[in-house]
Amino acid sequence: MQARNMAEAYPVTSLDADALEAARLMGEHRMPGLVVTDTDGRPHSVLGASQVVRFLVPSYVQDDPALAGVIDEQFADKVATKLSGHTVRELLPKDRPELAVAEADDTIIEVAAVMARMRCPLVAVVDKGEILGVVTASRLLELALPR
Image 1 (cartoon, helix red, strand yellow):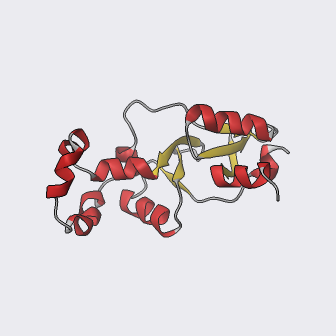
Image 2 (cartoon, one colour):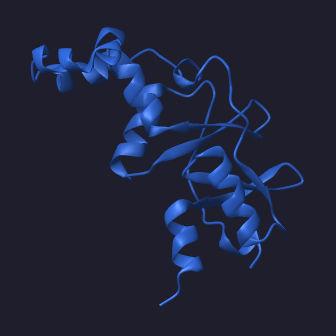
Image 3 (cartoon, helix red, strand yellow):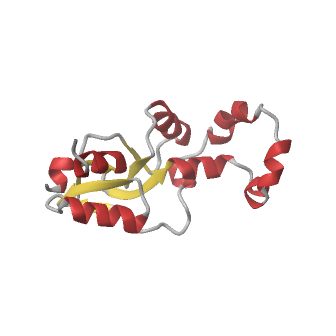
């Protein structure tokens, strides 16, 4: 099976999109991440939900998780405030990792290899630089492990 046949329509976001809206999209649809496009609409990177969480959790708590117990439950109320006014670009790591991408004619094994090597739960499928869709880890497992 080729990547073009595995790819599903999947929301994307842009580098300059509102970070809060991107986070809401991921949360509402329980998505592991979003493909981020550049100004030309070409795939640039993947914003994982874990990157959004990392942005939200104070660095001192990331450094010492035992401190998480001293943060009150109002943390959830402050999430929107922390993301407000920021762009998706600001949530991405400064040293951009290689993009998890597969060509339209790649096989299921090639897509799985990209996903495994990149440790990314989704792979953008492209044809001549244009996004056709995304293969998520759950979609890949669905196709690789038929009933």
